[in-house]
Length: 408
Image (cartoon, rainbow, N blue to C red; front, side):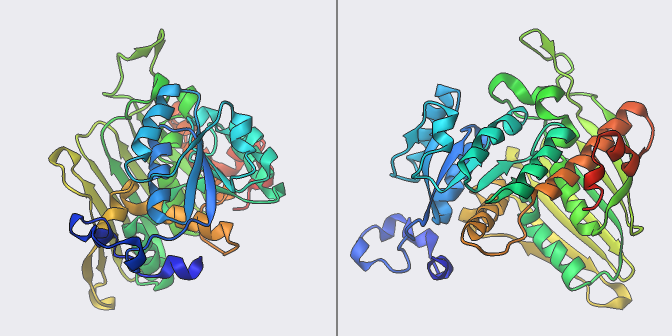
């Protein structure tokens, strides 16, 4: 399978109308790999369908079955799946049968945040490899319990922190940490400007109790990136923010929305690195940026996605070396079909890492412990916003019964 997965495939040509006269007997560059694994997708909303689409595109695993508590979500997911796969799907009647189908090799948990931990309790009884979407839980106690489960689990649990696979961040990590183009990293500044939370089934993402809060639900991705770049344990977090524009008059079934829409977060690390994060969720289009400054240069990794103008995402990485070395600016991108498959290609490479793990290879996919630390920073920031005071991470963890997880 590994040799087959490395073989060149001309994906544009294999699906082009002018190439459909090539029969299966004559396909070589156009031949699709035979999937080696079967997966079950639990939760068929937006992200669940993205995982189904990406699995079909990657070709290393077949989506064998799907489960959701909402029949309409299952109907839509099955209809959409037929656009890129003619493989039949098993539709399960309950969670237990979805998790324990002996024909399936792995489980993907893609349900609303507040259901992750309860579903995981059922899924682990299968002993199968598990992909668990971010955030791994909505509170730190369940997140820590998930780490403990993973430590004792005979297989593995991978967390869906896929932003680490975006093209501009792959290049940023390589330049800053592998090539050490910037010298010793001293400051990290990350920002995201984007529209509000999208509609979800039951509007679960408009409420802190269901989502874990904005900084947990949306920003655990960025805190994971910052932790990886800092290469150290966070020691202190200060944040302010709140709700200025979004959902201020929104109610669902008699409940008023309480989700935040902007924040500023400052993080100190044990090695002296300092970081800040800016979030704004009442913009018209999407843009994000990471600026890393070291003793020998500065790096800017940026992404702009103007979906109102129907423009593809554009990502760049700039290195400013000054007298210390070469300066450059490059466009970074994945193949168009991969970029368009979801989250600008990151989900595709996240899947590839999961398949590698499934085949016994060592990967850099997000672990449960890394998922916990992304939530620790996010939760400390939310606590700081609520109190108006800086949060000492060690004290915060002791207060939340996380003493066993003080080391990253």
